[in-house]
Image (cartoon, rainbow, N blue to C red; front, side):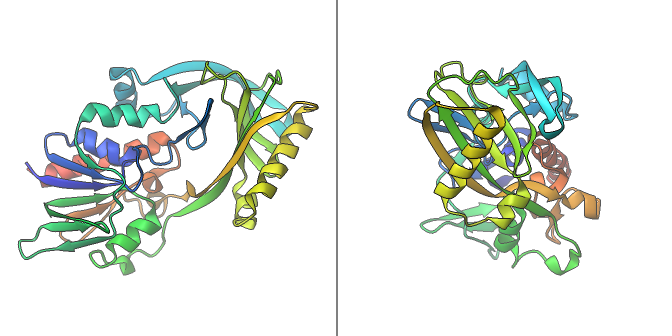
Length: 326
């Protein structure tokens, strides 16, 4: 039985923790809750899935389906979906959503595996002692004697944290992310928009989704808009008020909304929103490791941009850790 530190409580970190439960697992995350970018924002009586929006029913990660079924984490709904709203392309689409928002999926996995954890603990340094064991340091505390350290945070942050222990000069091409501004907005009255989610609402809005189909308790008409990655990159530091008003104007003009009072609007910037170029696509590898095979980097950036890709990355690495720890 090995002592294993997992840095990052997103879907990859949780996948590793789930698959390595025979070991002594400790999870660290800078956030107050698990899930990473699988995030559900609550404000008074409003709820918004402003990170991962849904899980596709046709993804190929069987274990994730098994976990969702085992713990009763999701439900399948069928909605009117615009595959390309700008070209009037629409279909009926089945998707998997969380029982209580998308963050309820990683939160329930975290609660069920019952491993030691330190949330609100940002790891800022990793070192090795004379016994070839790892120590992890937050700003206030040291955590000692780990046989393995598995870092499951965005690539650039992983690289910075492990640069003294991994030779990154051997990596010719690096994975990359797209940033995305997300806007959450709510109207006092229901707008009766038939399309509940879709792509390409506007050249500057790449995705939109109604939240009432996920949260039955919502009385106002709640929506989440993702600005396009191109728009976000060109306006990375835009004033939030200007961004929110621009997104609102696009939404209202597109759907002909008039005389309906906004009851809530707020934006969030995801600098590492989704994988643009995966590590596997440029290296054919499923993780980055130290020469001694004791420190590993993984995450959704390894395989792809979806929630299922993040889980798959963790599952693949866990198989290798099991072989090493025999």
